[in-house]
Length: 503
Image: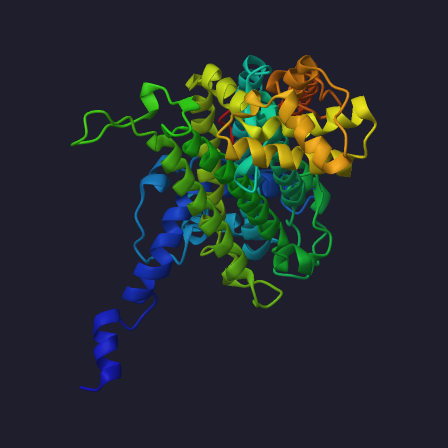
C-alpha cells in the first residue's frame, strides 16, 4: 500500500478530512457558534426585511422565511458539535431554514455572499467587544480619579531614568496614568468608528445585479456608514489592524503602570499595601503577602500584546482581497486580546480602589531626598539674581559636599551653601536659614508648582474635575451607541416576529 493510500485510510476520501476537521473546521465552528451566531441571525433578519421592502420577495415568501428564522433553536445550535455534515455554521443554519421553509428559504441568500456576511459579522462582534473594553476602561478611570482625589496632597518623589528626580504627588502621577488611558480609550473609540461600517451588499466582491439597498442594511444593523467600495468591503482588513494596534498600545500602557505598582509594594519602597482579597500567601514563608494580582495583570497584559501582534503578523503580506488569513483563524486573536484588556481594566479598578498608601513614609523619604534641590537652585536665582547655570553649579557643589558629609537634603545649611558660593562667585549669598529650609521642603516644592498640569494640589483638583466631566461625556456616548444597537435589534425582531405570526 502506497503512502497516499495510507493517508486516505486515516483521513477519509471525502470532505472533510480528519486532520483538517481537527485543526481548522471544528475550532472555527466552535468559535462561530459562540460569537457569530447572534450576528448571523441579525443579518438574516435584516436581509429578509430589506428584500421584502425592495419587493424581491413576496409577502407570503417573507412570512414563510420569517417563521423559519423565528423557529430556529439557537440554544441547540450553541450546544451542537461539529459533525462534518456541513462545512461551517452558515451552511448548517441555511440547511435548517431550508428544512423548515422549503426551497423558498434559498432566496434569503439573494444578492449576498458569505464574504460580505462574514466581514459584517466580524465587524458586529468586534464593535461590541470594543465598547465593552471601553466601558471597563472608563470604570478604571473612575476609580483612579477617586484615588487621585484622596491623594492630591500626598507628597512623593518622582523618578526619571529610575533615579530620584523631583517631589510630586501621588495624585499627579495617577492623573498622568488617567490621561494615558484616555488616549488609549480614544484609540479604541476610533477603532470602533472604523469598524462600525457595513459590508453588506458587497456580495462576493462586486455587489449584485438585483436592486437591493445597502443603505437599508446599514440602518437595520445599526452601522454608522457603509464600506462603500465593494472590493474594500470584503478585502480591507485595516479595521482589524487598527483594533489590534489600539489594544496593543492600551495593554502596554497598563503594563508599565502595573510594573510601577508592583515595585511600590516591595518593603524597600513601602508605598502601597494591596488589600487581602488580592494577595496570596506562601506555602513555606509565614510572613509573605504576595501582591500577585499585579503580577497576573502584568502577564495577562503581555498576552494581550501577543494576541494583538499575532493579528498584525497574520495580516502581513497577505493578498488584498477575500482571504482566510483575516477570517476565522485571525478573529479569535482580536477577541482574546480585547477580552484580556477588558478584564485587567476591571481587576485593576478593584485593586486600586482598595489598596492603602503609606503617606507618612512617602513624605519622610521626600524630605530627606535630594530631589528638592532644583527648588534650591531656583531660589538662588530669585533671591540673588544669578543665572540659572551659575546657580546650578553652586548647588551641585553643595550636593557633593553634603553627600560626602553623610547629610540628608533637609540637613543642608546656609553656611554650606555660602561655602560653595564663595568657590564659584568669590563671595557669599544674600540668604536666610528660613529661605534655605523652605526651598528644601518637598511640600513647598509641590505647592508652588501650580502651572497648568503641575502637581500643585489646587491644580490637580482642577484637572480631576475636568477629567470627571470628560468621563461623564464618554460614558454617555458609549451608552448611546449600545442603545442604538438595542433599538435596531428590537425593531428587526418585532418586524420578523409579526411576519412569522409569532408576535
